[in-house]
Length: 284
Image: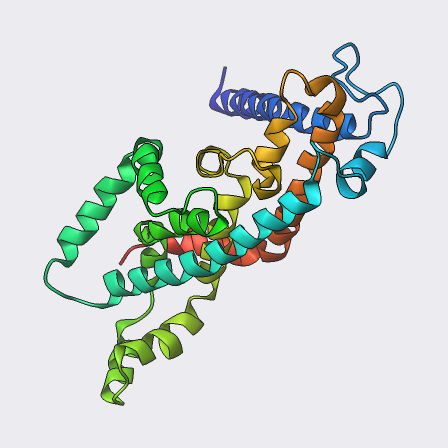
């Protein structure tokens, strides 16, 4: 077997493996979508595709709230938390990134090393301590407390944004300093206009954290008051053993709807998102 034939078989094998992985990844998503249009309210494992099709699950999610399904309220709660976290976390991350990339001060490398080590520990390890701290401050079971928890450590995620800012020529900052610009003026007028890709990447990343989070939201919003829940908690509640046979198809419809806003955001911002990731991977 010559080298050309080996290369062909290797390419075919790689494509088959990738196709298999794609099918494994896509099957649950397709099942979720088709089940959301099912006329049967419970789990139907006898058929992959529904025997009857209906839009009633989407109608129930959006317009027929009851004691279990309060999707519009959950959507509003999640959106508010995500927007505030997005704004605060983006500001923190960009400011820390600029400081670590463009400024030189005593203890800079130590701070970078400490933050890198802290990022290696799973966030789950600190959740109990964070919960009791927030409880002592009276900030559990509140959206404000959840926003604080989400955004408080966002500055530790500066590494990708710093990598992008490292690629911006130092001469631009030096020229601005010669003109008498302060560090704040350089940051706002010189660095940020050149950092649009990484800003978009940071915004999307910050928005995604509360949008899809369940564990931390469940820990913080534990009063049992359903009107305080986020989408993740509300959807999970539908999978309760006593509710799943009545609400599973509605759960699927809610899962489809929650993915639409972030999918649209990704499509619109894809170019900037990719530039932010690839630009942030280059260090100078």
